Length: 334
Image (cartoon, rainbow, N blue to C red):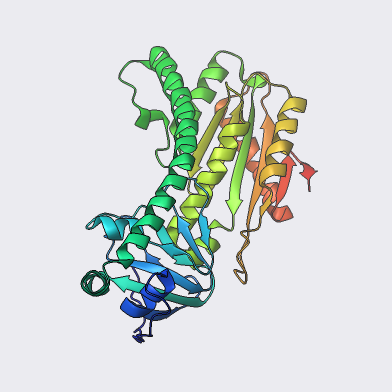
């Protein structure tokens, strides 16, 4: 966690003992924050809670869940703080300069001694937040359960094909839940050995701009964007296809039992949904885009040759500038 600049404590008279802003002004301290300043990180102990007076803050969760954007007036960080000695479930980062009011444990003890009646409103607000969050959590869990069932079914079938000693770590990228490069290679070699690789197409996909965004907003923000792209690729892939994360922001998709026209159609669908993403953060100065290169297998070709042709198509797309989609010497988009 980066060191914060010194803060100036300014205790202000409370507006009303029953209002949360008044609570923070009476028992907390005011703090000016910069753009892209981390207020707390996921996994840290919750020693403070916050009121956002001005500016905007985003809460970054694990995986590909969309960040939660907070506007002035929002109270955040209260769950881990009130439970006590509990790890944060998200990272909070400012996306514009602003002002927050921070209530730490010392201020909370003063609140407890001097104005215990105001704790009731604070707890009611926290319970209201938990109730709303519970509904979204149920929907998220149902979606993740369906994805896990599909992954476990594929793992079971793969174990039957390649041996019971196979584990999820042998075929999956554990960060995104996509398949890994080792398993992609196995599937391509198996298709070539069966004389069926000519009915497969390979897409190579690179996310561009992740490093710049991560440098500004932190590693977790970059990982969140990678997971969101992985979710999109998984959703668009067919049941027999192999969506794969190679490393960092590099991906691949092995399209099974296809022809060139259908494979190009899928490549265009992926491009249209992921080509350019504006992060809607003022003055960020960075965007995330995708570059795609594709190739269709040919009779008698091996896995290495198909991978090389897909990589060459990706290199051609890179030369066009992001975002771009190229297919074996032909530019398909934009």
